[in-house]
Length: 406
Image 1 (tube, rainbow, N blue to C red):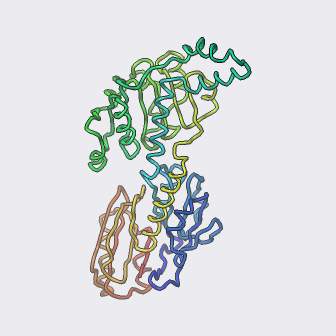
Image 2 (cartoon, rainbow, N blue to C red):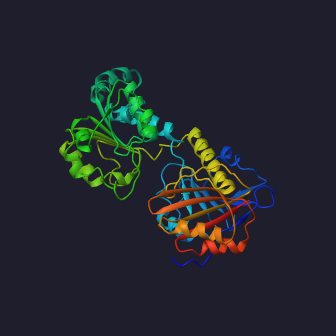
């Protein structure tokens, strides 16, 4: 890739004469903004030549992102509103805040399970129609309540696709409601597994989960591999009358196939946090207006987590919870730190090290982390580094971003 701009900046973090600029695209909770030292950061919606972007649901295009931007933080879990691939190619770190809104989403999923079992919303609407019936209200209630009879959660089987922060919390809470919970996640981490109740069963494959459950809830990110994962084929493998919940992303479920499944009775109920025109007003479908993370606590948690991670990267070069670059947190060992984002090519690291050797600079500490086709390398150097050296590092083939922090 031809670089028209040198992707580095001389940062002096211990003297207060350099201020990092952070542009916000949404209203960010003040508790998060307060995490940023106002002697080191300026934060507003009008910052020009920003070092970082901080947003929630605003849709970013690559043309919106200035060459000065080094990092983008999403105060939330999903990053489908950010052009992640294009950012990666420019050496821009994209991070999110996994787990910060997990409890809020989990609570709404539990409400969704109840709504899928009992026609609560329909019953409430009916009760409102009784206004003005006077003394007849109690008898009308007793006469018509059978229209809204449902089933109980206890003893039913719940299948969970995706055992990340939210999936695990849903699994444990559903288990405490005496549901028989089966989880499927081929990428389950050891750390996540420790958080699962011993009562949760693990499915070896997706078909095993689809064939045996009464309820299904999805907790995976939306990407090419998961788009329309709930479709005619997967629905055909489910138990008849499956109750499906989607509080992750609308694109995970094929709406046309859900509607067809409702007509045949293969799908019993569909509860979604992502309304669309064809789903609204359909019997058997409950649309919630994307309320999963809409709590005061969730917005505060996400904002605090995002700003702390931004600060950690800009001030110290550490990457936490990146979706496109390797995570790397290394304690400083010298006064001069150079961080480099580069392609994961076998010769890049050796060329970087050779450049330091040629310049007679001692590498006191080195960390190299890899994620897919990208790598992140931290060098702690024992002496002053000038701009000419940074330029030499930056023009090495495969280097995308170079920073000096001192």
